[in-house]
Amino acid sequence: MSAVNDNLARARQSLTRVAPTEANAHRANGALLVDIRPIANRQAEGEIPGALPIERIHLEWRLDPHGSHRVEGITEDTTVIVFCNEGYASSFAARDLQALGLPHATDLIGGFRAWTAQGLPTQPGGTPAIP
Image 1 (spheres, rainbow, N blue to C red):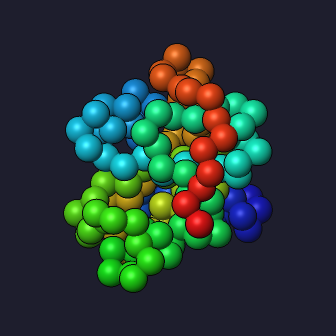
Image 2: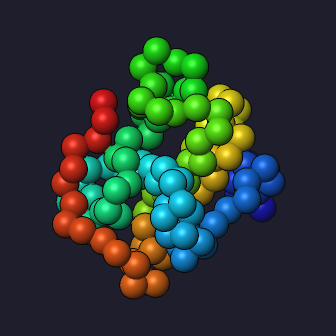
């Protein structure tokens, strides 16, 4: 196995990853879905309604539960479900959010593309990410 695959497997050990239908149910119960895809992907493929777009480069600053630059309402108790295109980068991102103090951070199995394959709601993309 390659080093990146080993690292990915280790990252996922601490996560309780969720399938698209589970993520949708968590969203209905107040979980925060965070879209880390670049705007070009969001424009081309669409977005999940209500998901917060935060590109990967800003993620830790916006979701640090004690940081001065965090998104309003983020606390240690916030359930965060991160997603990317296919569910790889989001696993690393969710692991990093857990290390920041968000124990309920996880990621979406299969990413946005699995969400759309399940026929779950989407909307046209292009929402600017939170800088």
